[in-house]
Length: 153
Image 1 (cartoon, helix red, strand yellow):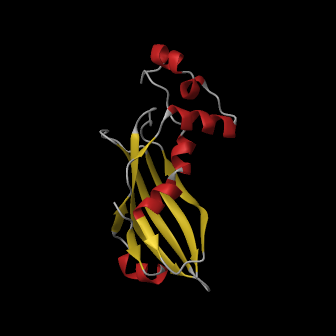
Image 2: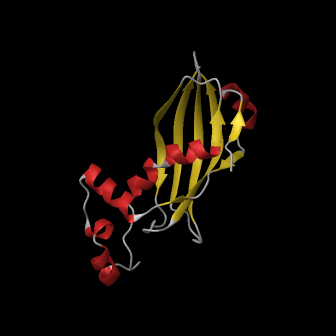
C-alpha cells in the first residue's frame, strides 16, 4: 500500500482531528529484538531468552522492548504518510506514551495516525500526532502516544 500523500505540511492544516493514515504491517522478529537489546544494553531474559520465556513467561514467547515499539514510529509513519516539500523532519518529543499490551516475537504491528494539532512556525510547522500501534489479532493496542513532530520547508 502506498503512503497517503500530501503536497506539503501546510496541506495538513485542514485535517486536524482526522485519522489520516494507517501504516503497513511490520513484523517484529527475535533478531530485531536481540539487536535492540544489544544497542540499549537491556538484556532482560523476557526479551532475549526464548527458552526461558517459553517456560516462565505468561506469553510463552519473548517480548519486544516497549522502547523498540516506540522507536519504530518513524518507519511506521513513513509507510503511512508522505509529506512533500519538506527539507527536514524533527522528532520534537512526546507528551504521553503508554504500552497497554506486549508485542511478542513474531507479532505484526501497524500504526494509526491522527493529526491532533497543527501550529505554524516560522519557518515550518509543528504537528502533534495521536498514534495507536496495533498488534495484529489483539484486542488492546501495543502503544498509545502523543508524538510531536516539526517539519521544515
